[in-house]
Length: 190
Image 1 (cartoon, rainbow, N blue to C red):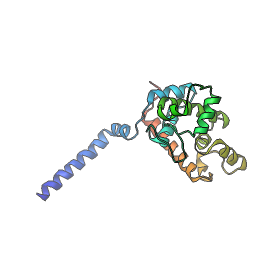
Image 2 (cartoon, rainbow, N blue to C red):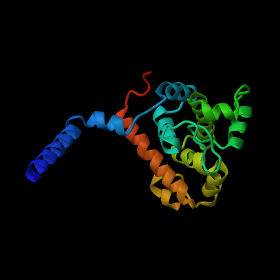
Image 3 (cartoon, rainbow, N blue to C red):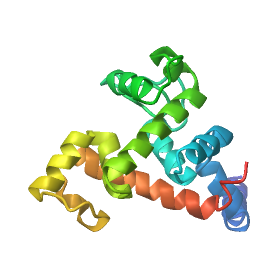
Image 4 (tube, one colour):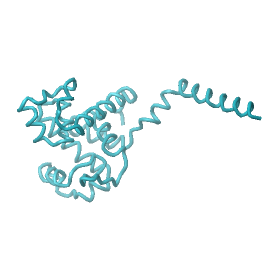
């Protein structure tokens, strides 16, 4: 009886491994899904962003879970601090948007977060790595690191960033960004 169980377990394990190799694309899409795809594509298009980057930030921030509030109080699928969200609402002309809507509606969170990413791209001359760092640590911190020469804004020197959380954040966002570009090359297609 024990030999039969071992054989069955071995056969099931081999079948699973074959499935992984034969259907690796399916497995990859299962492991790395992109939820809210249409909202990401629309908002990224509105602000001339790569949708893969928006998707990667959402993945790192909340893993596409709605209603998440961070320990520090960040809200929405893109995890904006309420003060930052209110600043975006005012500066971006989103007069009818509330922080409650950002918290509960992924489409609004993605739109507001994408507007903010665009503003950071403008502030940091299109450098994706400084934009990602500023999204996590705040633009004031990143501006100081660049001005003081503590960091030069390159991925290769990310270990120079004084905040360990921000170093790790950039690495994770870039990991998912690259993964999404590989798995979803046609993400721009609605």
